[in-house]
Length: 365
Image 1: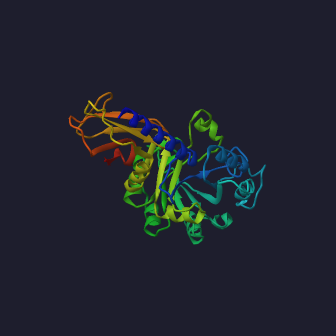
Image 2: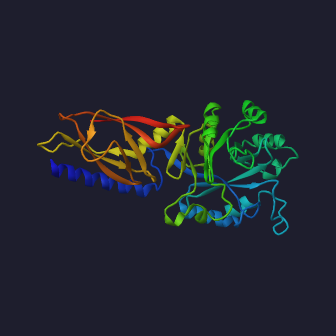
């Protein structure tokens, strides 16, 4: 029995290593993908500090699948040194920096920059940024929608606009939502997370987003070189084309990864967790009724778990962590040998609402 357990563990670890090599962030069922994106970044062509090709190099090194070039349309502090009447210039330079055989994709976007309300609005998958440069923000947003853009509200909790740091809707935003001119909302921006923004997104069926809004170097801001990562939005798609990703964004199929937090609507976060936790068989040593179960975390982040079931553990408490791309052994005192064991878990770093954490049950046979 012990030999069988050791053999099973080796096979699972080999399987785990193979899957990890295929996807450095989150795995999905065959024929599906969790596409890693950053849909809000800046360069010297607005108020950023780097050339567009640097953004491509950063994203390539960090393993992202897609980035959007989203320069401020109206705010151009470097215009005296870098004049550019074409607001698509950043996107063109970034696109030209791509290698012919790499997975990274770049899409065109812009940030419509106004005081509150509406604040700052991003439009991605646009065709021409110049057509969005209007004297008032509403017609610019309407122009983005006419291009078929995915439009979202940036940092609604930004304390430069909301002195209390609390995201809330103004009548302008309510108008945009009612008329289907606004499709998503940043619940994470750079180094902030907003409970209130998440609630607004859930109540209004807006797509949940997290972005870096990077202006300097991502390594400096997020300590990439020592294991950190920028905030990302993962989009569930059937294929890796920009068209599939755009469709999935409109459908709200996203999960945000921010530090060790995973944030999303219940059905999407549950899917991601189920696809990234796997279990070995139930194994009992011949003379004991302590079930040994290997749990493998295939995700690029640790999962913090609270066990909600009836059994107690032999060597740990009911709250535990599974490190990123690692496995642990659970030993449950089941009193009698069981052929079926239910494992009800709460994911303590999996948010599906303000202060609300994902719960799910795994059934092992």
